Length: 223
Image (cartoon, rainbow, N blue to C red; front, side):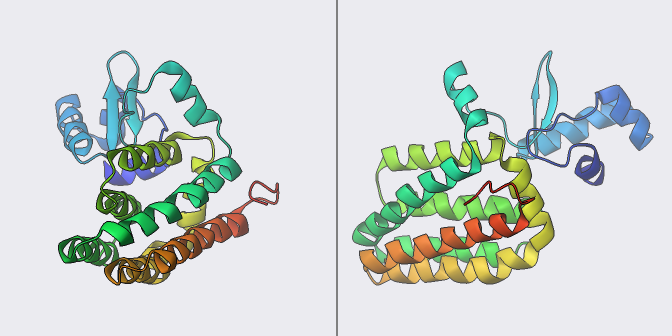
């Protein structure tokens, strides 16, 4: 089923074929298909809506209609600029608030990112790290805001470009350069150095922006 999803619904938000079609494609019963989908749903790989179907990725968080439309309408440039404005400041605040236990928690998230083996797991580990930095900042508003941006990354129109970028780069980019940059952010937080933590997070996000820019089709999505 995992292999089939990679081709039948390669991008987050894509709709999977019907259970009947999946059963036919897999040569299995619909009951087995339902069991597999239920397992994948618990792992956050798919979500299902009665009367709508099954979709790749995590379920929406119940945003109002206008907010959902906004998430789909934002451009890559707008979303990346928002992250560059917000996440470095969150990292700086985390450096002001962090305890040694907090730093160890973030180190474990970095280690988890180094150990990933697939692209989907790598992206999930990356999201958990950024969420973890917001948690250490100890402000539930910042955590909620970052979760909102993460949801936008999964569901906005630019997700296809993001997905294509990391298909090209592969898992090695996550376990290599990105993990090293995550580690630098954690070191600055551990050192209680807000300025350096802010700068390290900004450098990391600029790396992401550059990777997407290089993977674009020349339309100038990211200037």
